[in-house]
Image 1 (tube, helix red, strand yellow):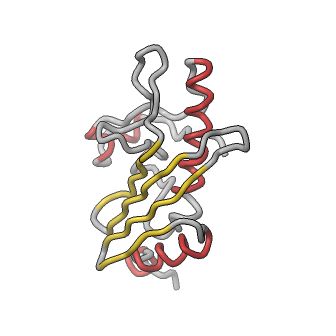
Image 2 (cartoon, helix red, strand yellow):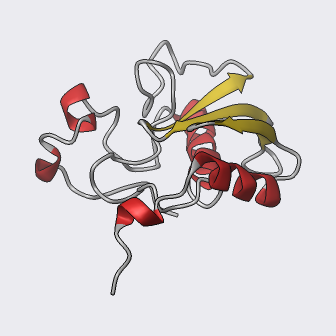
Length: 156
């Protein structure tokens, strides 16, 4: 008999424990149903090192923000694949690419590193090579109109 997803979903403390084990140089805390995790990511040996913050709660999808350095624009063009609050667009909500049964340590952190790699390529070329759809509209984030979009995401 299959275990319902509501039972299998990982609590913020379980997520924090996995992050702590996988990324011991990071730090954060879990309190009640919320999680905050901060760490440095260097996508390639030639890349800058970025300080990122991951926020997660059982009420909202995970969000990753670049704390420093400040992300630059390419010829005054907006940075692609970010939400209005500045968080990184790492997956298309509502498509099953991520759900609460998945570890943030296995998804959000590697996806943020991948996003930063494509960001650096974009800075050099002006072309986003990571695929995806750009920033989803608010109704897409709420799960509406997603069926009309392809399931393409950034290659791994």
